[in-house]
Length: 108
Image (cartoon, rainbow, N blue to C red; front, top):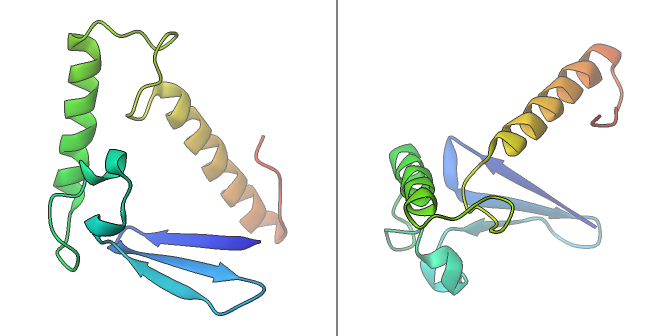
């Protein structure tokens, strides 16, 4: 029973809230990341990875996927897909609907 908040303007910090204990902030530190995630952290803890780094990762992974002849039905992409974008738009629609109604709504 936790909530997680990530703020694009403070990308190296993850806020974690819990019902049964104190809230905490987890700072990005490559030494805490699993091996798969470490390849996306170019700088040591306390140093900012930024928007250009994220874009570079997405483009590099997409080109590698195409270059290696992988297909989305046989392989899980490690970059956002059109399906991910569609889900994001549904979430945004639900946020706007929730704001207008003043209550929680389901993502459709």
